[in-house]
Amino acid sequence: MTTEEIVQQLVKYINAGQNVQAEEELYADNVLSVEQNGYSVQGKEAVIAKTKGAFESFEAFHGGGVTTAFVGKDNFILEFKLDVTPKGGERMMMHEFGFYKLQDGKVVEEYFYAEPTNF
Image 1: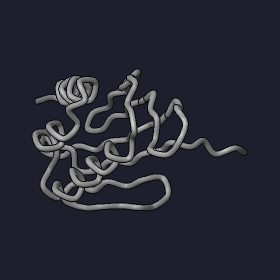
Image 2 (image 1 turned 45 degrees about the vertical axis):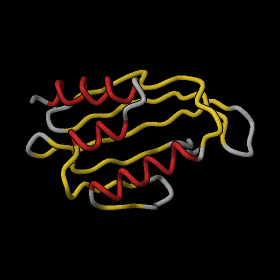
Image 3 (image 1 turned 90 degrees about the horizontal axis):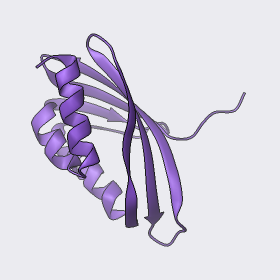
């Protein structure tokens, strides 16, 4: 698959709420996932567990998904906008960017940025 085909498949899964299926199919076994705060996990099973935990932290998911994709040769950026209610919290719009690196047709690294830094 080309980078663009991988992005199209990943976006399709994410927008359908099938993030775990996307990770099972499109991620390398040794994938690295890093959050903006430095928290990271390595390995497909650890990434899947992190994703499941994120979804379990929501009381309700009201909609949203990938709004924009920027595709490079072996990397890409996705922009997410999600309408969620966190458990014990108030409904909010989440805005996040994900940077992904590919190797041999699989996602090998992903980095997420959700809170803007003010200069």
